[in-house]
Amino acid sequence: MTLNSTLARVTDRIRERSAKTRADYLARMAAAASESPHRAHLTCGNQAHAYAAMEDDKPALVEGRAPNIGIVTAYNDMLSAHRVYEHYPEHIREAARRVGATAQVAGGVPAMCDGVTQGQTGMELSLFSRDVIALAAGVAMSHNVFDSSLYLGICDKIVPGLVIAASTFGYIPAVFVPGGPMTSGLPNDEKSKVRNRFAAGEIGRNELMAAEMASYHGPGTCTFYGTANSNQMLMEFMGLHLPGASFVNPYTPLREALTTAAVERAAAITALGNAYGPVSEILDERAYVNGIVGLMATGGSTNLVLHMPAMARASGVLLDLEDFEDISSAVPLMAKVYPNGLADVNHFHAAGGLGYMIGQLLDAGLLHEDVKTVMGDGLQPYRHEPKLVDGELRWVDGPVDSSNDKILRPASDPFQKTGGLKQLAGNVGRGVMKISAVAPERHVIEAKVRVFREQEEVKAAFRAGEFTEDTIVVVRFQGPRANGMPELHSLTPVLSVLQDRGLKVALVTDGRMSGASGKVPAAIHVSPEAAQGGPLARVRDGDRMRVDAVSGRIDILEPDFETREPVVADLTANRFGIGRELFETFRQNVGNATEGAAVVV
Image 1 (cartoon, rainbow, N blue to C red):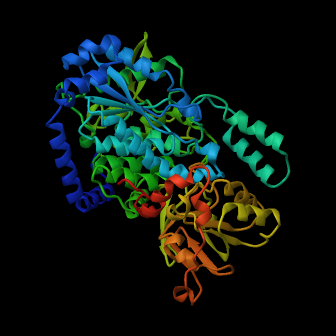
Image 2 (tube, rainbow, N blue to C red):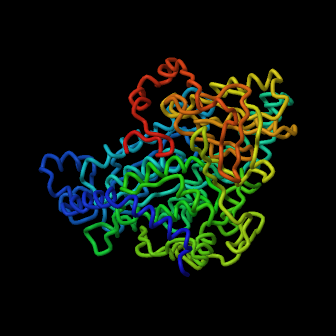
């Protein structure tokens, strides 16, 4: 199938924009690859230290002919998704030995659970943790004794940070290894209703706690289609996962077989063999276009609009918001997974999942097929699904039909003809809105503004009964320079209640919303941020604002707006407490949200 003309045009535009940075990157990777295998250049003392704890693997490591796989793990007990990684290193080492390779845990990286820090001070460290993860993974890989690598990470900032690191060490092959979603618990829409009832004061904390515990109930990724599961989709669309690996539940025979297969593949694609597949050859402009297509077709998390420009820059690829919007205009919305629908990711996977979707998009000319992946040349293997046949892992033809058209539809008969994202620009700045879960009658909101500094102020105003008319809520000084750009997800129940009461409401902020946020129109990541003197700092209570996701505009309609002096906020309180002292350098040097809000790339 001929590639869709819009995707071809966007790809060419990215390639042209990135010509110099990509060429420079590839030259660095080629120079580094020419020195492989790197441990051969280490002194005997260097190598003795590296192998001292490796027991029976020492002879193979000293000989230097067996591939040595570096494991970078984000295991901890704070994230249900990452709890499953506890014993992966043992499994990986055993699997590596069976194929004549060795494996070592190169290092661990931090992994914050945004569910724990949501609405708390710790959330101000969340976005910056992505760059810390990239740095920590870089330290791990800098031991310079690895022929290949396995990255164990799933959740919000972890995968983007690991991709930045894997790209930086792009001359080394890498396979990303998922852990899978927890089994389905209390349906996400039921949980949301309980949260809204609690926000409205209709139930107490005990009822809320019971619902939350029934929803988040065991090891594995949370089952809504937020940033963590959007990350898993992205790794499959971009060819860093094995086909069909993303949404297989933990602790199942198929999950274990896929982990073993990931080790075998990591060992097979090193420079020591004939199937060398470095990350630098996989993550090019075509891979990133494919990732954006997946984001739009699934209605994925807006956080990836923030992360992907930073991820791409690490491999010399320069993305812009216009790339996301143009691809969104050409790609149909094929899935309805909470918060865009009632189903969870387990239901999505059972309906046909990513294999069905990739097959449909390939047949419609909506994906680059001519890419490199960890499987080799081409994206065709990703339309297949893994099965255990007589105890042996095999990839078989994926489904050609959706088993539930309320969850997953063909590209020719989608839920919407375009993807779920819209770029907004106007005299307030540039931002994005996820519209896949927003009712069409709410795509344009014009109303008076209420201005707030923090989400707690919004909730206090709600409890005081101050919202009695259509309102656009502006929450500013929430950008990366102001306080690390925390998610404002705790606003979702409040704004949802107001909307359910019949008011037209919208949110405009230089902050972020959770990947789980849904039906309330929210213009987020507005840049330049207020802390930089951006236009949001000139907005006043009572201003008339128009948020128009149809035309892609976001404007203050007051005649004197352009001539006003921006408000300057006292942000000193953001510098201290719960570790914020350690991140002042990040706040001072972070880039704009439209460019990924990054420090290290």
